[in-house]
Image (cartoon, rainbow, N blue to C red):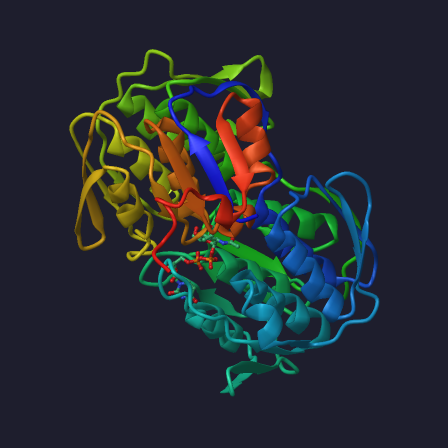
Length: 434
Ligand code: EPZ
């Protein structure tokens, strides 16, 4: 079933448990390939992207078994070095297999990732970094052929025209843990997901200094051992639910949240008139949007600790029904506005100026059939539909299943009128002309 029917206008009320972070779990699964000992990964979200990653590392020879609810044991006693196009094209994040394969085997053949609706997804910085560490790289027939036999530690500047690279940093750090010498990465990404990966690597015996800063220093060791690691909560899922409480004027308690991972969003929401408070236990927050009269805000997405690009689309949904004019500028993926035409179908008043969305808030959005295009655009359409008057049908929701665990179940438990349906159940007047 790949559509959902949402009848809007119901405030989200109650308590929601935030799942483990997809963008931490994916490189962490890759990191388990750095050792031939078992690694147990806990608090893993049940997502299609995770299932893809499991298939890919199994095809490389790893043994992956369930180790409890949301927990997996990975053991790469044997390891192959080729990740095929068939595997990589389904999930771009599989490029982060390069680092572990080079660290463990000193060789890798990984398909170049395909394109992506949010814009070009180059890996030039990854390859620049590996070359700096002495890796010989040849790109042939869509594959990156890597010979790491002469790799050794070196200084690498990893900043690009859009700032640091999250998976590029993860890739370099993973390789550097097992190559001889000292690697110093300048302009490293310091997203919480990178910090979580580094903490897991240290628990496996890696030597990493500067964790959480833009300068990481890694001293290579001979081998790494197994570990048990609990993935951090998903700050983007948490931010999405917080924005859901705001846009539906709801009242939510979120369990399993790290407020320190949400600084930029909470700062913007305070400017907008919404406060988010710790709610007793350290990993619980309460968002009371019942009396919210939101003020328009300007947002610019930046690398962490700046406003996360993965919450940009969801912020557009809130600003679409916030009186006044807001400007949301995308500095990480300038084309990441596929949600705008769909929000316009629901009555949003948004005009584009380059990589900025100029949003004039309207009183109400109206339900409509809309098309999901990518993971976070889907989340924005869900939020808009929850707030809109009338019925919406969000199509191609396999996009949202990549990054939000049981999203319809969680929303229904909070009072949303949301149901998964088959495409043919969409009312005829909604069905696209055949
Ligand atoms: C990670 O992607 C996330 N994915 C993305 O989340 C997130 O949007 C992104 O970081 C930015 O925070 C995972 O962690 C699996 P980047 P990543 O390399 O690492 C440019 C989601 O919705 N760049 O930090 O691939 C790039 O084009 C996904 O969960 C280069 O120019 O992103 C972009 O403009 C979407 N050359 C910027 O840097 C490179 O070699 C940041 O990209 C690499 C990146």
